[in-house]
Image (tube, rainbow, N blue to C red):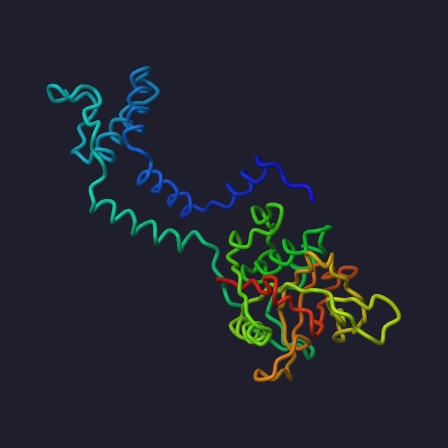
Length: 307
């Protein structure tokens, strides 16, 4: 698989920075950048051209790096201290504690959050509430990017607007960039977590593997079974074979629904419905897919759940 160039990844990551995230990174610079080096850079640059680095440089150097009372431009420095008086100071402990507390708050503001949707009955399937046209507008996956598309569907549901996926791909889905993190466990544990997340209004991204099915004339190895196309009169059931990309990588889908008859104490994979990146749009119509028993890849990062 061809890897995106570094400069494109850098621009994508930069585009994700909110004001809170930018402020957080700026404070990190103030806290941890070697102060002596920064002071020397500022003093050297200001010494070369005072017009380029005016009073703000003196303000930053004296107040932030040295924590001394700032003197207005033109003030005469104390004898023996020169143009750059402080070369050995560092931020005092109380200020560092305060800035660390601000960073913690900004970290919560800057990270993508999971805004809960609600389960609702859509013609006999309990689905999370979302705008089907927003999902259709994202469309079906391009080759090899099922994980990225599943992540985009999930964030679209949580955010209430189509997700472009910018900054969420780097030779594979960047889960944390969208506020999703790994969950591993036994099959029963995964099914219980799936149920809990849907009840809380959050879509789950699931890793599927091939499994053999009987009673079909071709494509016996599948990752899902029936597909349902939404129409004005309800769901149209289609037995469409979805094939995993390979036995090495499997296939990623975004689980968004559950059968109304599912028993929380005896859950099966076939109780759940997903937006399958291979086919969420069929001629402009939303399609959801019923999972097939025996396909959740419990040995290989089975679930990605929202923070």
